[in-house]
Image 1 (tube, rainbow, N blue to C red):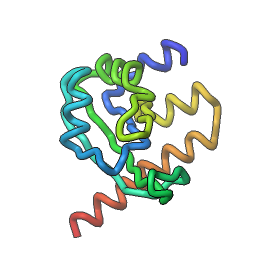
Image 2 (image 1 turned 45 degrees about the vertical axis):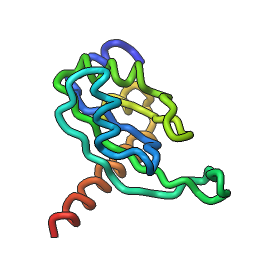
Image 3 (image 1 turned 180 degrees about the vertical axis):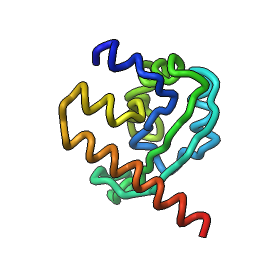
Image 4 (image 1 turned 180 degrees about the horizontal axis):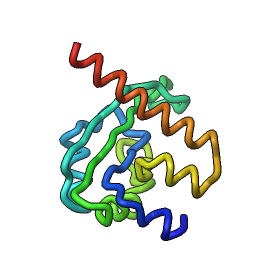
Length: 129
């Protein structure tokens, strides 16, 4: 990615492939090693195609981690992307579909990112009902 794309003022990181065993407290502890964490929102659990030790699907989720500043968010992406925990590798990116779209010029990437944000909105509303 170009530095102009990464210099956007984004403080939120999208964390994909979060294993079922990893709680929000575990996420907080991990991401606090990078810097000040303001908020963590875990979203949806799904079964992926990989099989666990028992041969069944591994349940994973994703989360949004909000940091105090954009430099810390970038540091988290650079230092913790592909970090392995509970047999899976975390996949991190800035939670900015516009920046990813302009860099990749990929409609598929933009639609996927928008779907994730929409899923979060729906699950958040359902929790408050």
